Length: 137
Image (cartoon, rainbow, N blue to C red; front, side):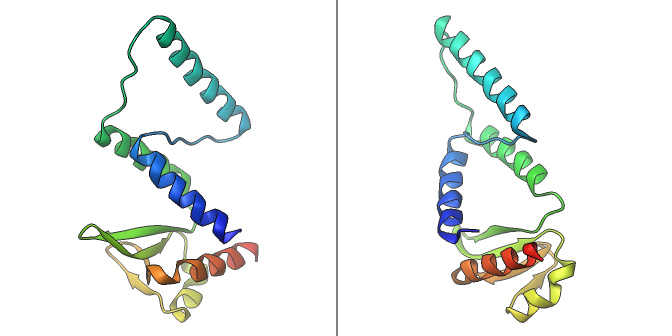
């Protein structure tokens, strides 16, 4: 995993989530079908002169939340932890049992409420490297 690329991806995802431009697909064929369907709908609406209505922030957040949940099922992943509107930590979630001791050794604290290992945001790249190395094993 290229950590600079990962950080750029996370920044891009945050920007796109705010405007509801995110999605998920199962494979290349699924992606093509979804893209073609959305393009067809939008082109038809433009030709018919129908205004494009952006989803509300609540609708966009709900869609993103369900897509993220599906994408992360059964995998180890990192999520920002926001408290009082500020992100100072992140959580490693998912199937962490096989790497429990490693996460503990890196200073992670298990948080039952969040169902994950919490780390300060300053350690994000280091922990991402650890997860990458564990995934390769």
